[in-house]
Amino acid sequence: MDETPRLATARTLLAADTFEQNCPTRAVLDHVTNRWATLILAALTAGPHRFSALQSRVAGISHKMLSQNLKTLVAYGLVDRSVEPTVPPRVTYRLTGLGEELTEPLCALIHWIGRHTEQLLTARAEHALTTS
Image (tube, rainbow, N blue to C red):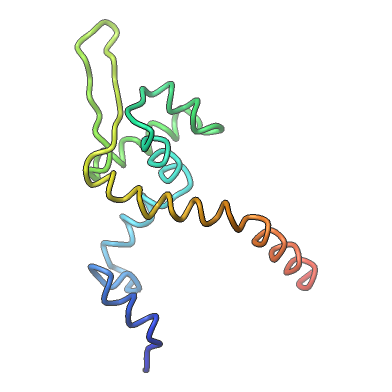
């Protein structure tokens, strides 16, 4: 099967073949590009945040979802969690070097979506009219 030049380029840029069902890249992609993780990473580009500040910044995220996503981002080495030995403990989250590297293309995607939101929503509404 012949590949399009774009697909061939995408395949060479990927560390593994993400199109394969058992590719480990898929799990990482799922965890890092979900709505909440994307917003958390983008929020941390402004600098370190405490949990409550992140929850305020990422409007609509529940305590549970913020906690789960932060644990995942820490586990993947994208976010650092530091605990100061105070009473109560003071926990701060910040991007790691790997996280900072990721936020550049991630924020570019967010900005692209922001610039094209009206067009995207118009297309979606037109599509809904033609398929209903």
